[in-house]
Image 1 (cartoon, helix red, strand yellow):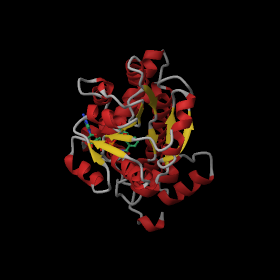
Image 2 (cartoon, rainbow, N blue to C red):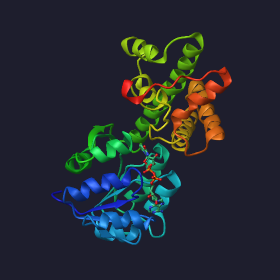
Image 3 (tube, helix red, strand yellow):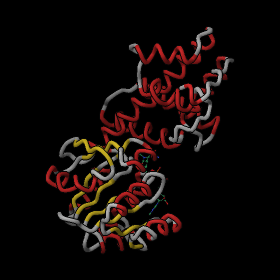
Image 4 (cartoon, rainbow, N blue to C red):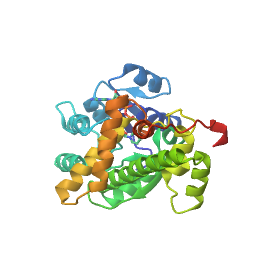
Length: 303
Ligand code: NAD
């Protein structure tokens, strides 16, 4: 698969920087999005414009998608003017977070048209997408994954999760559940400590030198909560979508998740209080309101 033609559908917060890296790496790239301004920015970098997913599939051997929800991915992959109808496409790589059942459904339907599906959800946020330092959790046929490696290497580090369709998606969902659960319980601990008279920076120093260390104490709290900027870069709506997908899959599999269910309600309450677009680190403000105390502001440069 030397220098295959590439398609990219979905040029949003994650998709645009990823497609930009592929354009800058010199790949033959065709792009499509409902947002014309994002398409224009890629065309300015040398990409070709396609009117819809079918038109991308007529131009490109390998198509990447970075789309918001399972419904949109299914429409783009399998709809009337979907990837499934195109003539040139051989591989469809879904970079979105859509859950294993969508991945399996899409893989089965595309396979009937000789198109191989690879699920490849990503972790690392917009900053990781810009720098090419994402974690990419792939699954699907091993030989296809090997062929994709030189392209995916421009986006970040690839971790192969296995042959079965949806394994990468399952890995992504449980990773994000662990991440948001760590944030929720670390926020509760922070507020309790402050109410008791502890300095929040001292709390983080102890957590990070001890057994309480996690991705919230190392990164989210010092970066977005102590400075009270609440700008970590992940919305409450997206975190709620990921958590809901994870709990739905777990329930369908017969795996009870009482702790995850409680975290889902914390996200629901955060959304009710602050809105869909509020950064998910805002959840600490709810706990502050209930506790009647506020974590004092620490300047960013001290964290
Ligand atoms: P986004 O909403 O910013 O971008 C989605 C893009 O898809 C938009 O540009 C939209 O115009 C386009 N789109 C929607 N419907 C379309 C259609 N029918 N045809 C063509 N284009 C269409 O979302 P995002 O933040 O870039 O996230 C994309 C995916 O990556 C989601 O599944 C999300 O859960 C996942 N993800 C996001 C982050 C993050 O930090 N934002 C991190 C990891 C994974």
